[in-house]
Length: 232
Length: 232
DNA sequence: TCACATCTTTGCGCCAGCGCAAAGAACTTG
DNA sequence: CAAGTTCTTTGCGCTGGCGCAAAGATGTGA
Image (cartoon, rainbow over all chains, first blue to last red; front, side, top):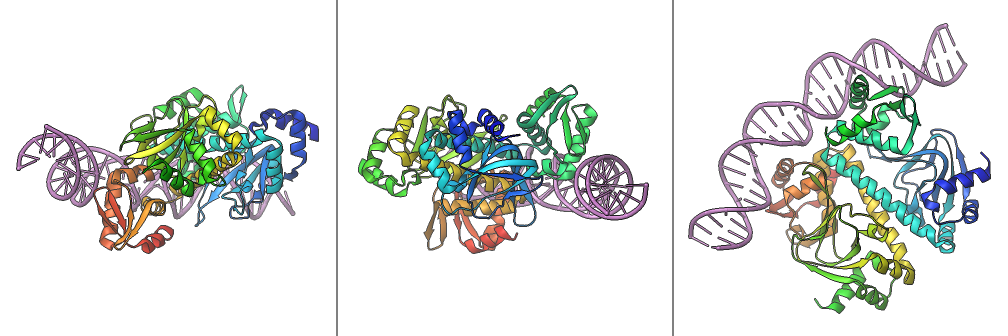
């Protein structure tokens, strides 16, 4: 994928660049630093000084928050066109989470000064940033409500549907989650354990709602899953 | 409390107004609508059209998110100087939560057009809004991690400490939570039940960590509580 | 001051989900 | 293809915390 394609693609997909012309987007992207990473590498680390804000060009990140003793939770998956680590715009902060690549991933990073300068030159950027942050907050508030009020099986159904909407690819046999997603990750995403996720997915597979292999899930019957997620 | 005192106080306390002169703050506040509410009244309702953004002048709000069947969670308490419902700046949205007053409360509300106009006139406002939103997101990410990885007793200790920092008043016998806080609310805040909260607070009272009456909590031994919250 | 409403406490039984252990399945590497 | 690694499944026992029920405590309004 050459540079112009990247720019064009990011331009069309990114909420962060809405209200920005294609030329302006090219300028904005060119003034950041491009990072190419292989799978399972760390883009930034929780606790490290928050130097840069990143926009994912292609590939995918998972945003992981670590607890003192070993445990962790997955805050969110970040696909192409999405921005992360906005916190770095503000002075002297630390990254509140770790970003790890899922598959080969390219991202553009801007340091504080550059981003502030860009926001001054292109006012829509600041507004877009605010909108993106509000959307994140809204999503997390919904998940917080879920984890407070719902049973595990219901939470997993909602999680799978959410991930499906964000990263589903429609094929004949159902909607494929288009990145490797293990039982452990689904557990970390929903606040439960591998064992419980495994048992529940097995049960769903028996009902024909999903099909699954190692680190791969196909939702065959989204409708039943939606019904269940609303009336367990 | 007369108007100038309100302005002065808001000015000194509000993260939202940082980088704004006192005169400018007066202008900003005057261009909103002031709302005075008694205790336990609704400022805005989840699902209703998000017309206005609010700044609490004095008193306090609790931000409640309701689940389909009866259950609910408390997303956060909003004290004076704090802003809420920033989402209303963006078009055609609904309030994602309900705000209810705790005690008599005054707030200023700005509608979309006014707020957009103000942000154009006073650029720091937009930045402050972004910072406030990022702080909310950060706090909620921390609570999400807690609820995913910690047991109930630990979560309640962290919740109480958090509320204490935000709304504690130091007196001889300990740090008083300076608003009525029931067992039910603490349960809704931490994703558990009244029964469990009651049992745990009783146990802490026996240990001398807290004292409590109906809807009132005094933290006598914050240190022990901190130790426990970190190494249960 | 009495009736009523609301909040709190505690005993008790129960079960959703945790977590160990161990086996099996799938992918990787030399 | 053999050995090692990582992911998944399942049986089993256990327990943290849920939630009913009922009594007590505290506050409010007529």
